[in-house]
Image (cartoon, rainbow, N blue to C red; front, top):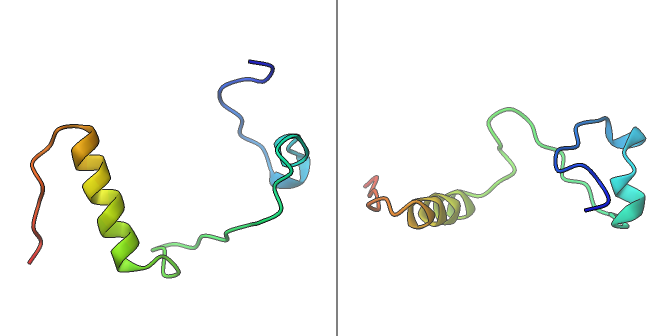
Length: 59
């Protein structure tokens, strides 16, 4: 691996944007209002499957 496994730095100073030719940005704000509820549910399901947890039903 030619770079450290953890990389925390301001995006303007990060070499990863050039290394991986990243063109998109996703601004995230507190509470994640731009992320749809269906996406969050899929992430939650994937997390539970990954860790062999019983699926929770919030309804």
